[in-house]
Length: 359
Ligand code: TRP
Image 1 (cartoon, rainbow, N blue to C red):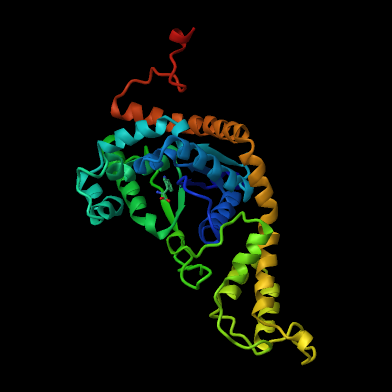
Image 2 (cartoon, rainbow, N blue to C red):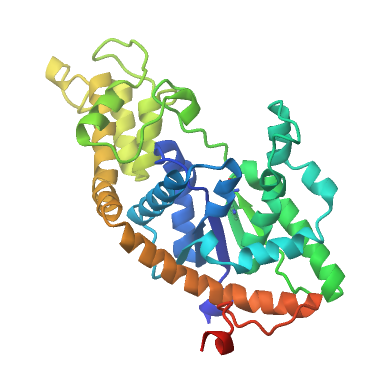
């Protein structure tokens, strides 16, 4: 039966601001695609967010906004186990246990910590959460017994640390037997640089992004402000190097529609087989309209769903809490094996509440 060897895929999302088109095309859309093909686990890494110590209102607001974003963009919370990291106490427990098998040297070499050091921060400025970030991430993955972890290239080293921690644990406590599943990283090696409105890589720090849930008018404005060359109206345009064309092709996916736009570019005509009359000219304004319409078609419905969730944060919490119960059932099994292996008692019921005490 196909379901018997379905792989378990898991990924974590840091709760930061509303994502832009670059995040969507580069990370969110492929991750949602994967959740449809596998048993999937997706969580909001709110404990990781504490390493940068946001204020409490911001942490809550961003957790809701990230959850609403993913729900709006197509995560199905019935199919995908969708939860908040901090609702699963098995994760930080496993993080501690893993700390005790993870070599300090490995963490000393971790980019997350080295980057903080490179910014001229001393060990007295850097919190220990930044240092042990990779161990918590390993626990996220190993507690749920994930097979596959889709991440960006920047997370490759964190996955290697995860694999190393799992192997060390298995060697130490299982005599090599796989108590903790050693996961595989699924790293998108395509160098997919999504251009922003100035043609450089789309990134918040360059202030060249197109945020996802804009009003129609703002989408119009954003697409109009995309930098193009100064080819005169009606002359052929070069698609390959053009930001408008690249964004359109990435979004549209359908090869026919991409080809149709390409021939308009190459001929400088709306109808490539039509007349040379000025009404049939195709220029940057038309290209930008095509992109604008494509963005609207993609994100209008999600924008409304996003707004609905944001007006109803209790609904988001309800979904995340339900997801956490499913995640805990799974993590509880893994932790029972881990506790048994290391010699910790098992006499704590999965909810952490002793039924004798609460009765
Ligand atoms: N560190 C990841 C990032 O910065 C987020 C993350 C936390 C994560 N835990 C994870 C990703 C577990 C994959 C698996 O994007």
